[in-house]
Length: 416
Image (tube, rainbow, N blue to C red; front, side, top):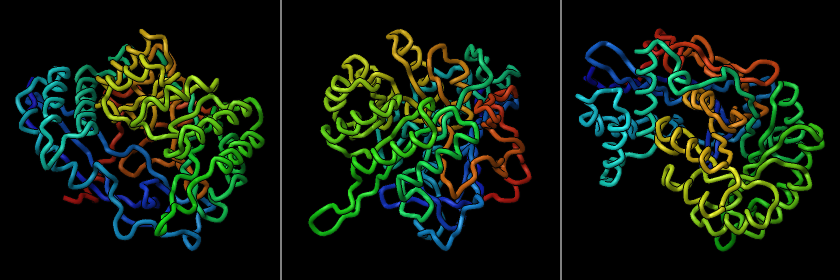
């Protein structure tokens, strides 16, 4: 079997999401966005697929566009979906044509080597990840098995935590600690088995100072409000402002210990591993990381060896696909350190179903009081990460990554 084609199909969707100037997602007024489907086609007629978006948030009963800032004008096209994705796939396509799609390690190595060359169309880890996930989908379709069983998986449902969006200034949104507490009660009632806060992360710059920089004290108040709202037994986590200094991060961590949070995530930038080594030594609460630091499994190995994290953090697109993510998981297993995956999606679910060590939680979100996550995207017939009333997300037993595709919607909304 040989690869004969690699296709990108972009199609329109409505979205009620926008981004602030720092790149953080918030509810916004209705606009048009895009999603992309990548297909790897073989000479035997088998096709491996990957979608650049698995979820779809629609307005909830609390949504009122009159209270919203229109955070991005015109169309909203998520990174890695528009022309940059198309151009990157065109660049790697000649490398993939003629390859055996089951030789994922060989293909990964060829794409990895392309990253060194850079150029006007860089091959990011996300591009390698997209190709790798599509190859795993193809292998599952060929074997007529879900990907998690090809990976040696053993569980078909995974406990989920609700991952709240970064704070905003919307009335009755996420503008105050009390807003976080009220929304946390809703998430508990929905059945989530844990809750993670993303606190305020936007800086307001003036001529000579940074005004409105997120404050540790306000983060602590939000964490305290959530703990009071959901009780002592609910697992809680925080992904705080990414630019605190080490002493601000320590102050936050000390308070989180009193509130019995289960981990602290990325309170400082991740370029300086020494800061995280220091923080992990000073705190009893587990420090989780790295998330955004580049370098795939190799970077995570260095964090483990240097004691910069107590829990390893990794995601499908961070390390370049399922193949590399499983290597990261096995590495953590050897070192006896937990690893938690971030970001939702079919590839994350199938990988988690094959993990022999914690990952304990599936990150479901990002969530906001104004938006409804529990909807089926119109390009699917069934949701990718259905969650039952007890807070368990169920892994599909359909072949490959389990996509149940509404082809009519894609056909009717194509952009190309």
